[in-house]
Image: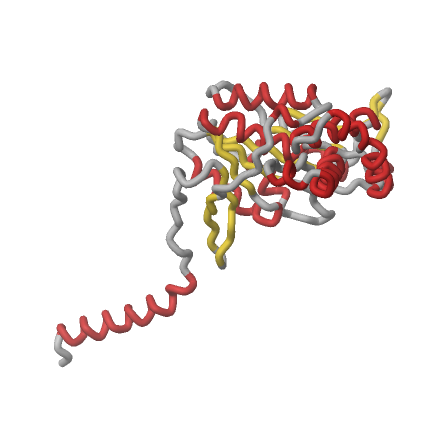
Length: 304
């Protein structure tokens, strides 16, 4: 007859061997972020686990640096101010022309309201499947979090958008009141649209009813309570932005006026009169004409 103590020892040894084999398959312990290290974080993946990486260095762009988008700036600023104050606020979708200030506007909001508790969490499109885990990390915190999805778009058949739909407004569990989602995109409905999809539309009396494919695409963007559209800049607006950035680099009025022709040629070569192009020209011109002044200013660009 086997000794009970020996049986127990044998059982424990086998259990330990089993745990060693299972350990690589188990999810690692969640890494609690250092909330005091930064006001902005990026969701990163290590194997199958995700964690929030602190971003201590941020672009110094301010709301006052963003020119010729006053209406868009006022709308998202009001929504963010409500959110920071603990009042009802909407998820926001910023769409439109590239380089018109969409992402820079969100970064500027962090610089404006960071001292009042606003925090930014940047999440890549490929990591949207982790949104539920991210929200769980943020729930109950005293800060107010904006989850930032930049340059968001989905290909046909891309299923990751479903995770975004659930967090926005598609789950039995309500999203915590200290979390909003701000997304930028060049597409208003976030997904490609095809001509043949219009053929699915039906006429019911005097109304047009979209087909199922179009309804599916619209259903995602409709979950954002606030839509803000951005448009290409005309020549005067473009030159106004160039002048602002050249002035920030220490250039005088005469220098700014003398740079206008080169600024227009720069935009012509780039095929765009966007805020981003204006910022890039200002850096190039100030760096070549006034390197000392340019070195004193390290402001961030006007974004996507």
